[in-house]
Length: 168
Image (tube, rainbow, N blue to C red; front, side, top):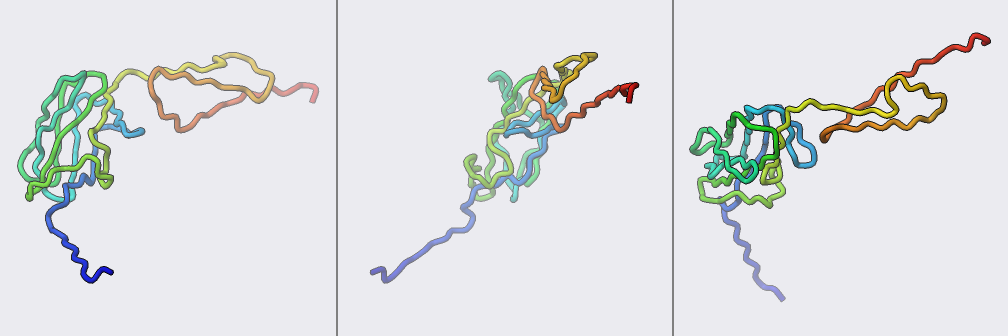
């Protein structure tokens, strides 16, 4: 038999939470941000004021330190310039005014940490089979699209040209 139960709750013990992440010109697909902008900005907002610690963008294992305003704030803009096409990982830590550090495993964040980014300004090419000018006299027709890089396909329009039979 439990006669007494004491529950203690301490204020100011929760870790900082990321509320919003934006990357210049980026589209997020499966926890990866894709952008073609090489003068990139990463904007990160928190639910409270924090201090950012050791922000670095890694490319091929080499760290790149961003330009940003330090101090306690709830919004930070990290600026990078002269990036090349490739895969990047943005890592940082943050602590609040009570020295609580960010918990990268916390599901309440608006993004998974670390932040994965792909910079790619190359031209998208697509191969189509059957190719242009091929006459088809049967339905259905299998259509194969081949892209030179990861692509989000939102729609496909197929135009048909019909010929009237003069005997009709």
